[in-house]
Length: 118
Image 1 (cartoon, rainbow, N blue to C red):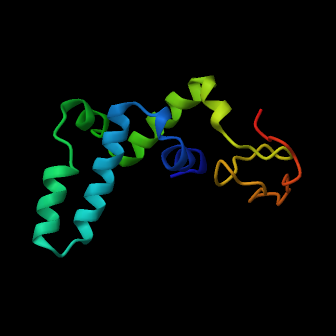
Image 2 (cartoon, rainbow, N blue to C red):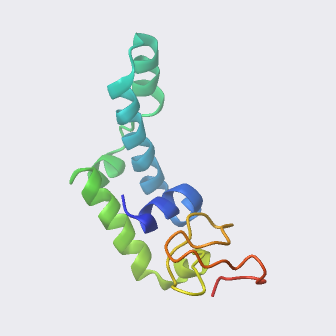
């Protein structure tokens, strides 16, 4: 998962549709199922985390990588999502978190600046 997609799924879930959030939860549930040794945990995950919604499963029909690519393309096409992104004022790289004040790529620090978004 690239930085943009990871940022959105970690910090801006409100930018996702309800089906996209459910699909992401479904994918996380599948990963948990792979590593679970407990029958009761597996049963709970299947009942409460994995989706049976037709629209959610359709989003995932192309696989995990395709799902994330499709969501990223939709969000990039929607220019209003950019206002939620915390970008480095120097190199414009996406910061690791919405509150970060130092760039992970060029190490520029904007701790003394008012608001870097824009």
